[in-house]
Image (cartoon, rainbow, N blue to C red; front, side, top):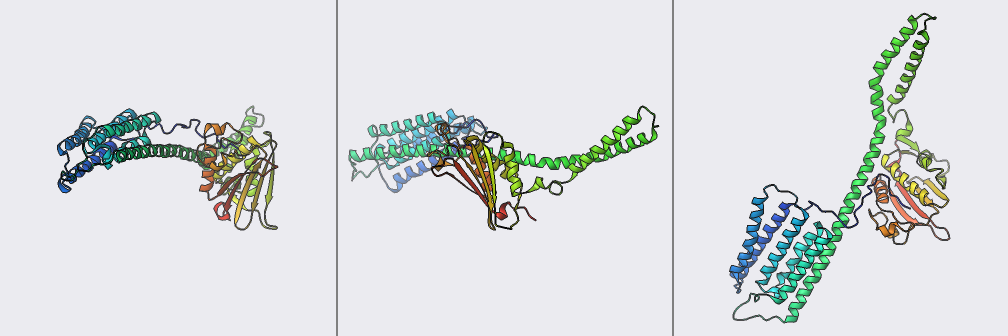
Length: 439
């Protein structure tokens, strides 16, 4: 089954967020000020509290360079806002280089603060393109490798020098490199999923808004009928007076009679439109369960698959009457449409109810869900390779349908039919109170 709704966006990101303008300059400047404060505090603490032999002048010079860089950005860019992706890459690369230089002046690979090189790369992974993220991660790895070769002595007491084994320094550098790669991949994955979920939820809201606008047309028609009623009544009255005043042998008598009849017909139509949907046409606000299923199924008959509907309920119990909610109608239409599209010859729709819940099951005799798609049903995106296989492609459309149904209080389950039969099975079940129309 494929539930790609016709209203879903056709463009869908496969490489992650576009991220153009996602990172604001204020965020970069604030993060850098925090880093400057932390670096300054750490340097002063080591020098004056721990009384270790720190090259304080050089360390403060490197920290001051970042402070001047921040001040320059604040003056040169008075209009704060999102920065281009290339600028965000450059600023994050500068932060990594500044931190690597500071760590190099304070022990290099032996300094445990080497771990902080992960921070700018993790930030970049969440907002930069894959190519720029890879370049930033590679730059950070080169900085780690450089710190194994070039470094000042680790700050320590002069009377008790500390000599760490070279193997320990290499191990620490490898651990930082491993953490950097893992954090980069994880942050990138989270950013991609967040962007896809945001787009999917936006599409869901658009679908629901469209259905609600269609549902509101009945109210607009009633308002229009009310406004047109007065002038039409005047036209009808004038036409009757004209017909009464004209002699029977007048050439205009027949025209006046037609005008009266057509005005009366317009009045009858407007009277129907003026009735509120929930008061006049029960199908606009509520419908019995069989009628609702038939309404959804009707447009899909004759499209290649035989649709069989069964209704099951307790004996002698009245058939429940449901609310015609736009989100439920759209979601069920999407499920049935795609069942018909993938079925070989037959689609079965079973609606059943009891005292506690109402359930609708849609079965087809198509290929069913592929094994790699089934565990991920309901996610807003599946890979293009999954869409190319039979039963694949349940991406944004199924996500929209599932989201709308769950918002209405339903429980949605999807599975494959057991052998020897094939096909997909989707079951939607609501508590009766969630969808049943009030008496």
